Image (cartoon, rainbow, N blue to C red; front, side, top):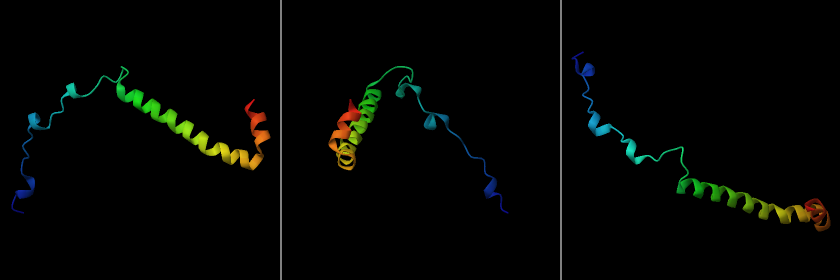
Length: 69
């Protein structure tokens, strides 16, 4: 072996350091949290709207209305 495999790798911390300033505080509510909450709510409503006609078609509209009440 010629010694090339055991070279010392220089590590420069200033180039690879991640600054904490660009991350938001995880304990506070942010715009991204609101976006996620609305997206999940929309997904739930969309799934309900999708399966409502399927449920009405399989069990009948009257049974669906009775279960809803």
